Image (cartoon, rainbow, N blue to C red; front, top):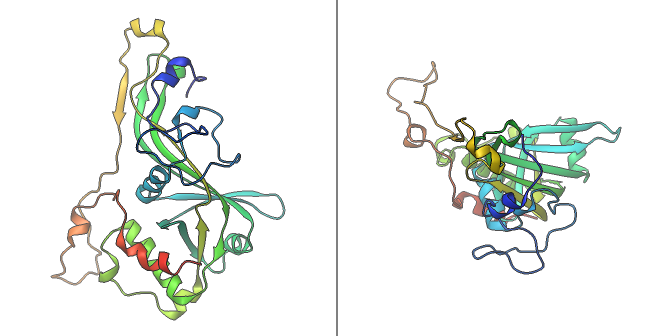
Length: 261
């Protein structure tokens, strides 16, 4: 829960840039001015339109949520795996999916990703919050049909989830490629929102005898668990033993980005 922004909130911003007509803070360069649809209205000091910030969030997050409104007016939000390759985000699902068929027809969509970095415990119940990084993309998606680009998108998604995995596995067959839909969504309208730091209590509440601070959260991988049908003598690869979310650009996206429509 968070209260309405105060002057103190604005003075202890997360470090993400707020939108102004001028350039953002040092180290942040927007590729284009944000549209009215993605411009933040609340907690604007936590907002960023810098593509390096947006891309980093997309690259680290494991799950994206895709929102659409179906022709009958029913809203749907679908969790899905994704991968960013340059200026495009790839998504996949069953070719028989009604939702994906609607998406491929060019309807407007909203894609969001979120990463929770910590729980923020304040002295006041109303100032409890979370440290987080999130990104919102608006636009339309198109169906990827060209076989080489579709295969490259599959590779990018696999490598997004587990970097280094693609060379170790059988690639999709022609039948599997036909049975699976791949959608591409350009990063045309996007914004990020970030909160960092300690709780922001009302000044009078700092004297209260209640513990306040942050409980950090992160993805922690456990020891790999072998498939019961795995033949003896096949050891878990290094990327399974030392798994962690990557934060840098990955070269496996190059092929998909080069063939993007």
